[in-house]
Image (cartoon, one colour):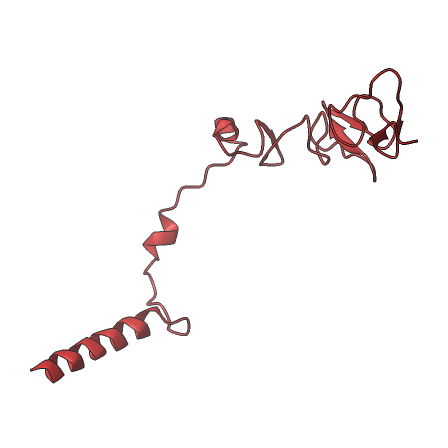
Length: 124
């Protein structure tokens, strides 16, 4: 009896694997419901998706959620790219190696006695 049950389970497994194998052809007219029922929300149609927790930012540029304050490809406005070596801080492209307000990173202000050299305050 155990052998018969094991044989039936193996046959059911073989049928299942052959039904989902990548080489098997789908019958015409049938749609994979798992993929077809998926709802895709884009920020151009639904800008509120950019406000969801975990989103890259609250602004929508070219159908992607971005943060215009920090995104080097969309700094301050959509499509404004920062040149090589610059970063986007507060919506402006700055050079972190020399900028006194953004020395090395955004919002890293050097004190009045030091200056920003090579991205460090008081390098010398």
